[in-house]
Length: 375
Image 1 (cartoon, helix red, strand yellow):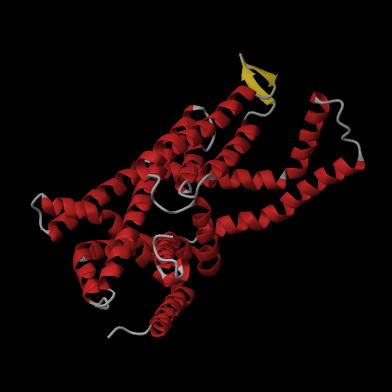
Image 2 (cartoon, rainbow, N blue to C red; image 1 turned 180 degrees about the horizontal axis):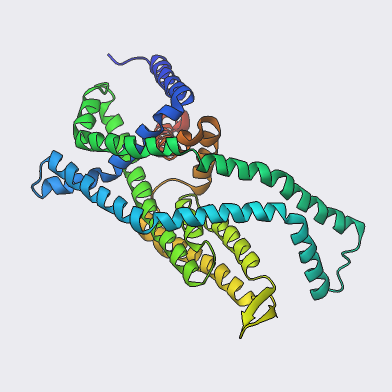
């Protein structure tokens, strides 16, 4: 005999409370294991395909691991040194920009006065606002820079992730099908068909989003990095990497990357001096190069919204951008980095369960009343 609905709600509420408590108290400890599980989940279809080709599960896992190690070594030798070098230089550039904020605003004020004589920059209100903006950047920039530096210098956690995540991924990938079978065997018999149906929908949602969106991030990151470097922008590799990395959040990747790239372009190609035939020549603002940088991100956003996302992610994922951003914000605020890692799966689960409950509600007496299905 099935449990009463009230009893079922009680047990599911206890399970949800235990899940929240584990995230709250063990979030930092769980980070490498959550990452390892995400990697194993993404690679499970590859292992299944290798099994269908004739390999055993252990052999398929070993082949995937060796390929991953090879890709990591190539990236370590060819890409990571430049990435780390540009990241360090960019942090130094941000520090110098913060310290020189008042002088930069004075230069900006002089340029505005030259280009737009009709603007009354001598008025107290405008001058006070410009001064407030400069002071705010200078006062808050130091704390932001210290946070960036402290995070960058926390190498112990990085080493731990690099060691534990591959090990966890290897063992989870090797035992993935066995674990799924064990979990299926523990399902309540009365609700097993419904749970399997919901789990299948959640899996389809996650597969479409995580695997498809991961490919989108990789393509966009490569495009932004290569295009910015060809445009001659300083730190183009690290800016493209950051923009691609956070492109899974709708519009945020292009927005943050575009603001960062245009800011660097304004600093790099603002009026200054160049050496021409051994002589120092004063040059003006290079609006063409700055416009090229802006156009790179405009095209990237168009390419993502009209070609990449519709073809690689699809329109039936069921994760609305606002719902995804809300989940990332809430879980990131409550549980830190591990909260952001589990935000997408939890958002997908809640979305699937919500659609199921709405469907059940519309098929029930509370919605239909006594009028019957024909009304």
